[in-house]
Image 1 (cartoon, rainbow, N blue to C red):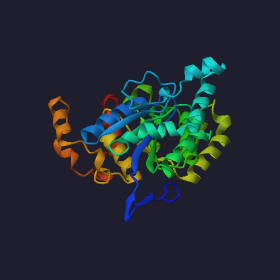
Image 2: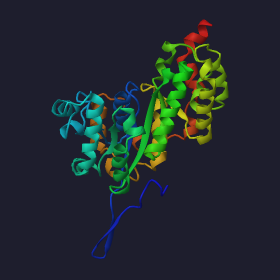
Image 3: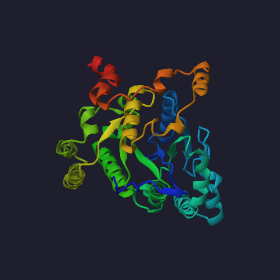
Image 4: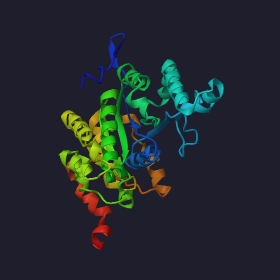
Amino acid sequence: SSRFFSPPLVVFLGETPRRSVIMFGQLVTGPPGAGKTTYCVGMKHYFELQGRRVALINLDPANDTAPYDAAVSFDELISVDEVMEEFGLGPNGAMVYCVEYLEKNLDWLLERLKPLSETHYFIFDCPGQLELFNVHGCFRNIIHTMMNEWHYRLCTVHLSDSHLCCDPGKYVSALLVTLQSMLHLETPHVSVLSKVDMLEQYGDLAFNLDYYTDVMDLEYLVEHISADPKMAPYKKLTASLCEVIEDFGLVRFIPLAIEDEDTVSRVAGMVDKAIGYSLGVHKGARLSADELRQREEDGEDFDLRNAIAPALPITQHASSLDIQERYFEHKEDAA
C-alpha cells in the first residue's frame, strides 16, 4: 500500500525516461533462539533450488560467527565487542549503539548492497534484541529509508518458537511481541511459528495447532490459564491482553519446519505475495542456465523446471491440521 511504499523514481536522461531498479527482500526478526539464522540458511537453499539468486545479509553486529557466507556483514562496519571494550557498555547497550551507528552511516550499507541489488534477492538476518524492532526507533528508521528512499520492497518475517504454545502464558506473550513488532515496524508482515517439527518434545498442546496459528477465540485460552492456581490471580490481566490482541485482529501464524519443503514453500509464497515478487519482475535474480546445470551436476536436489514453474496457490499447501498430524502421529498412535 502507499503507506509503506513510495512510487519508483523516474529519472529523465535526455528524452528517455528510466525507472529506478526495485530491490526485493525479507527481514528476519524474532527473539533469541527463535531460529532466525537457521531460517535464513534454509530459505536461501530453498530459493536457489527454485532458480533464484540470493544474498544473505548479516545485520546482527553480535553474530560474528554466522554459519553462512554473508554477502554483507554488519561487523565489517562495527561490532558489539569493539563497542563494549571502548565504551564499557553491556551487550544490550552495545547492540543499541551499533544499530544507531548504522543509522548514521547508511551510506556504507547502500554502497555494499548496490552491486548486488539488480542480481540478488536479499535475506536480512536481523538482531534478536526485542527492543530494536519493538520499541527503539533506529531499526525502523533504517527499514523505512530502505523502502521509501532506496526503493526496496521488504517484508518482515517474524519468528516465534512454537514451543511457547505449550505454555498459555508464554503464548500470549509471543502474541503481544508479534503484534508490537507489526505496529512498530510498519512493514508487510508474515508471522511464523518455527520449529513445529520439535513441538512434540516440549509437552502437550491444550488445543489443536490451528487454534494457535489462527489466533481465534482467545477466551478459551483465558479459561485454561485461570484453571492453573498459580495463574488464576492474573485472569483479568490476561483477559484484557487477549482482548487487545483480538481487537487489532492482525496476528496469524504460519507453522514452519525448516526441513519440511511444504511449510517452507508456504512461507515463501506468503512473503512473495506480500511484496509482489516474481522472477518475471526481478529478472536479474534468475539463475542462468549454466548456473542451474552446475548445481544439478553438484548433486543438489534441483529440478530445472522449478525455475519457470509458477508457485502453487496458498490453498494447495498443507493446513495446520495436516502439519499437526504429520509431526504428532507417534503421540496419537500411542494414545
